[in-house]
Length: 273
Image (cartoon, rainbow, N blue to C red; front, side):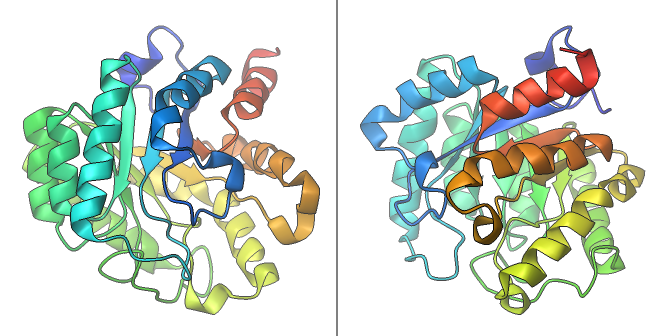
């Protein structure tokens, strides 16, 4: 377990994964219960904290292939205001973005973590994270960013993901970033995973293989699947089940829309309740 990553949020609670609770300001998000209005963001973020989130991750544009494109200027304004409101409420804030200007605004407002969903501006973004003392979560993307839909590797143990993340981790370290995590990107849309059975098979294999990324010497994050086609009206329990696999594989950071049940699972598996 990488206890150094976001260690100030962990305190003395060592040896467990951190929980990254997700809230979405985009109405296009497929996980409908994670969608919040701007005026309700702080309340929902505090609730997420009470349920067990160590840090709250805010998204302003869905990564679904069918989601509307949000103009960059709008992304910047919404994300900046969201981070500012969370920081003012003493909620540790993460922001999901592929845009360097959005990253700059959010880091200036006090974002603790940058959830980087594109590789198009790595050098600039890493320099800014180092300057502000923020952590960075480097997400795999086969294209410039996750809104440019590409194919996933054919198998979860393909070296393409590991090689890209290794290269980008080296760049982040060279820039002076000290808190780094990697995400193999199983939560994003891929053109060759339109069939949900193909998608979930890849996701399960990738969760089980999470330990291979520990060789990079940084924290490992996984975005927990929800498998709507299998769980249907019970989909809110899906992420908890997949969290079991991730925890047993040694994942350091669990990105989830259900922080309460996931935090309870961590206690059950690692602390005996």
